Length: 572
Ligand SMILES: Cc1ncc(C[n+]2csc(CCOP(=O)(O)OP(=O)(O)O)c2C)c(N)n1
Image 1 (cartoon, rainbow, N blue to C red):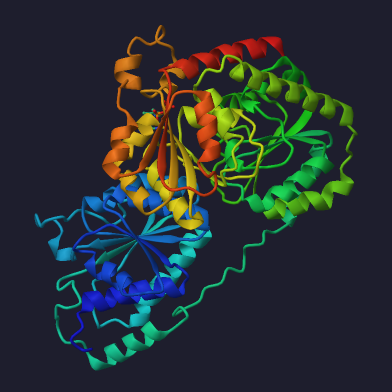
Image 2: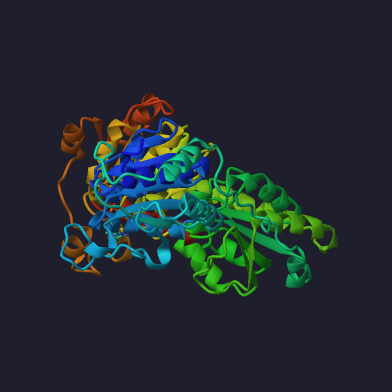
């Protein structure tokens, strides 16, 4: 035992302490500087290992896994640009409040600025997106507990702040356990063995301040201001645990509900809200709204944001983190603590002077139903296969877990009415088109399967992550409109002569060759009937990884959406 090398022993302590703090998933990309950390994981049968070649991919995979598990996931990388490749996933985790622990193996300090291989400045590399805890180099002069309590605090920090955190670990040679280093003192080894057999953290940390001071709400004077009709908006980052309570409150408060696709809110709500807010009917109704209460943030609908921007009444945001929630800067009150807010409103309900508005609300709901039916009819009328008709079909599936990519697909799916309960996931923190397949694989690692809807450019952007599909079951539905068609929605060919060459990047790539390369089942779909039947016959909730390529005509869906929007807004 006393010929153990210190870099490996140090790494074992780090992994062990994370494990006793309930961090049990480690996502690893290969490297030599990180070898002691990787092997410490490999030798620990109580932790789950996920290995992939691409650091950008593992970052997003860890993000997906942590989102699904709702607990921190650790990432291990080697030194150098490997760490920098995690940057997009770290930003997304920061923006969507996901705890991630980035364990970056580093070179010893004396190799900085020496021209040494794979040596870059890693400390604080993520700037404000991830706080950095830098360890000292492994040594036996410091008490082992000083290392372990740093890990305990780090886990507490990422869990309570819901933000990613970096643990930078300088390690020196020898790195592999079979290579002998300097002899370690006997007292140190005894302590080491005792810590490694411990089942509890060196220091347990408890949060005693999570319940908010309810007096704060009383000071907010909300009760005096809200005595009429409410609009609830449910956005991203609202736990499904709150849905029942929000529904109860909406009923008691005379509130109508708009629910963003990402919320997965399964109860009564006004659908197709991105278009419906633009109708005269809604505009008339909105004059009676006293307050908008928005739970969560990152709304997909740009028209809803615009409506909120022009709304003059009280706007309140409610969230579980203190991040800014309103890009219009119109919210005058932000409540941090959704559970506490809901129970506060429950308590003050009897004091509110609520007028009965049942008729007005029922009339609005009726109009919204007619609007949705008309919208679906217009999409289905010509049997054309495009992003809209495909989204209608997806909204009717039993797929349990859905990951929705960015760009056009999340907009068309946000428009349609999902009829069943699903777990919805997105990467809408920074809305990057990168790492979407990897994130879906991370989600699948928790649930056992996941259905992903993604644009062709986004799928090509994350090409290396197709490799993960051999281990994690994801049914990928690629909306292949042969380029980035979102740009055509923003400005048409006539308005933007550079559209095809500089924005859409039109291409003829078929995903069949990609499926062949990665040995994944594949289907090319050209009609809505075929799409409907593959969705039904594909097992829906039990399937193997596959690529379903929706072969759309370039810009057909965008043009159809423009046309439908115009006609619908005109007739309602
Ligand atoms: C990492 C990153 N780079 C660039 C963008 C800008 N961007 C937004 S949408 C888009 C095109 C996406 O195309 P595709 O995935 O095919 O979806 P479609 O627009 O056709 O629905 C791009 C490049 C981004 N959001 N993220």
